[in-house]
Image (cartoon, rainbow, N blue to C red; front, side, top):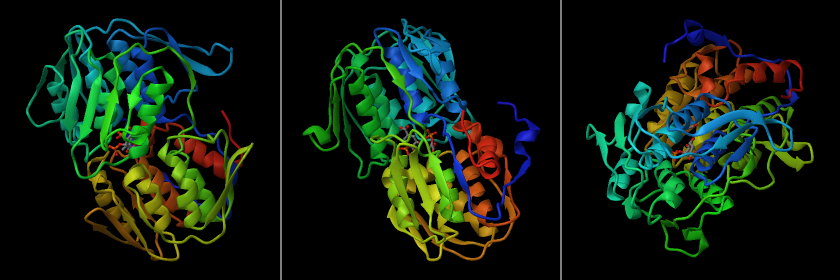
Length: 443
Ligand SMILES: O=C(O)C1=C[C@@H](OP(=O)(O)O)[C@@H](O)[C@H](O)C1
Ligand SMILES: C=C(OP(=O)(O)O)C(=O)O
């Protein structure tokens, strides 16, 4: 993708004098939107997605499905309200080329779909996508009967030689480097001849809420899924072959992208309301209610949404983030501003996310005067007075939002390439300045 010089400019992170009080309408969830697009594409009838996230990762998913022959049309939902995508499934076609960008959900979830196409599907992406683990998907699909041409590294680029169908059946994978391996094989499982039985053989498995999200969304469109939680064997998930229903689904706000806005209330001692916070959800961001409360805030789910209030003090935390790894950059930013040390554990796999997040957070917070050290599986953060400077983002949307959180409390923080937030939250700079300027936002 060509780099726009303006995108790599330095963005002065806004530094408000006082408490932030605002309502922020957070756009749709990346993880839910990309699952919903894929499942609607594999269904037996057309479906609707209302209020989908439109960001780099979700537009890459939509573009890839379109390239394989799926219809994705702009429209208003069946009740005439809100923005929507209408998804019209079709026989999946090859040859086609898929640009995965640096979207884990696209590079992991779509190769199984490509095995159902009637020709070769080539997968390529950003340089970083070549370094992100994909072996669980590649080896898993081969064991299930797929033909895949790659360079033997267990990574991109690769070509799936779609044969129009996949046998499926039992498969063992080690998903300790990414839960997305499990989700990927389950999501397409109903369309494999024998369905799929995925057995995770590794010692750890990150991001369990995201696997629950996969299971819940499959069940909601008619798939039969057996899980460890529904009385099955530990670390084994089974999907029965069968037709999927076309549904009308409204996408929840992205609770992980709500994080910087809630953090604004926490670190400035203000109140931020996020409307449409779901009462029940599989999104890992829901854990912020508990984590940010332990760090000094308080919150309440009301009919206005989630109302989060900071007390004026921010405390350190000792927490295992293995289930909610994508929250780590924002928690590290808040922890650097706390009145006591923090230990963030269970997130060694973040070294293979958009960037090596443990190294990037350590370096960038320390360059502002902080005291962060990497551990084998996380970070130890001892708060110190911070000063302004450049906060580098390494093409990582969550590094940019982490830097913005620090900028709330520290004057003179400038964020390099804030435009990288377009991966999941293209409106971030406007939402952020709007939150600080007007107090109330909506879309
Ligand atoms: O399935 C998903 O939608 C995701 C799963 C997690 O991946 P890992 O298990 O690789 O951390 C998470 O970090 C990522 O942001 C989204
Ligand atoms: C790890 C993340 O993304 P991806 O879906 O690319 O893995 C993330 O959004 O924090």
